[in-house]
Image (cartoon, rainbow, N blue to C red; front, side, top):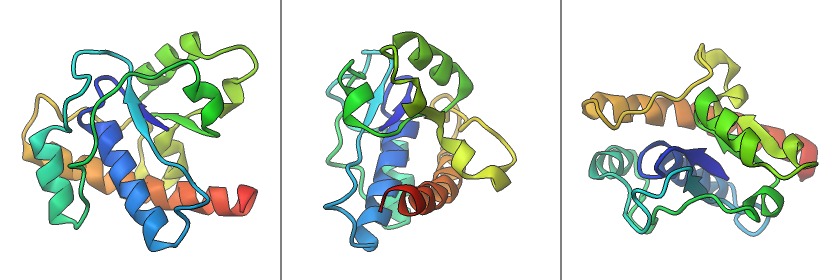
Length: 153
């Protein structure tokens, strides 16, 4: 489960990148992928058109996704609830049911060579920000899949 603020830029991009990787590796039956937001401003909306265009240029479709908010049951339904930045992580920490904190993390912790911990929010910037989000999520997706293979498969 990937989580950002509104679930229209970063977390759906991470969902799309990771889903494509999981499918390419033939692991769709073993690994579930989803995304959500902390706020409800965009519930039901498709990902930002700029995020969709950037992903499409890399052969990844985000078009079937719709924004939703994180739900309490997500903290037990998913082994990993990964925040796109430290602020999202702090907010998730306050929402997390007791005993489930081990599921929380930062997505970029799976890409230690990225040189940062936060996936920057591209919403108020230009198209280049969406390409950076893709670069970072592709690195972290590889690291996350390697971690899952080592620890769960």
